[in-house]
Length: 257
DNA sequence: ATGGTGGTCGCACCA
Image (cartoon, rainbow, N blue to C red; front, side, top):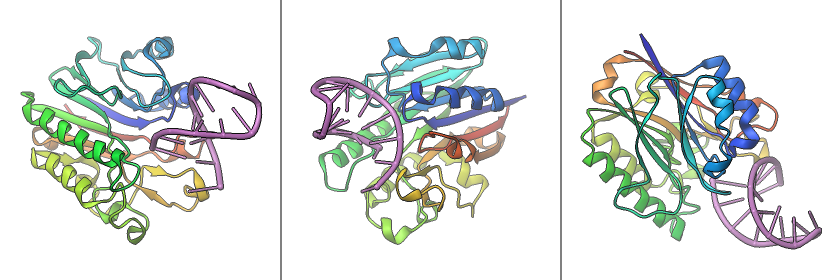
């Protein structure tokens, strides 16, 4: 038996719906975590996904942010939480569900704008809440996936010097990332591709995709217990080349279960 | 200097 799980920041689900449907039909992951759906729950296109055999769990809001999880598992995702239990946040960025015996945590980490700004402080605060949330979880098997807005190392950046100490690559953000790993998580992509240099996001400007000026900021973390079963983790750059694409590419991991 | 959203229909905000 195989279990596959993917993450994709779609930058508006309603605009990207044809892409998401085409991609789901082609790859048929068991679970897809979506970020930046940018629509309230009442506008979520449930029918399109139900037709493809997916259960939907949604935490949306108007215009900004918004996360959702789609699951093919017949029993559907059991909701755990939308948002942190101890941190009131109007921004919809966190969705936890349990599928079989795995806690799946879909994250849309704040972008942070620029080092030293209020948004950057909010990003670090948000990451500390994520750290505590995971730390306090009693689940033995956990997958955290989504848009982390962190490039963990210079190998994850097309031009590291340009990004040195900048947002997405600063020391404090990388410390927060390392803090999560220290809870017993493995970066699935890096674990399987120690010298890989694929990216998951390319700015819309400056023809960044064509020039492969990208960063690896979308990740799938698996708790140590799941790592022996990890089979594959790859970035699918193909949809980034489609017409009117998201600026992010999907990342997909599969496990022997 | 592109793209998505919403408000107003040229522009602010966010990434």
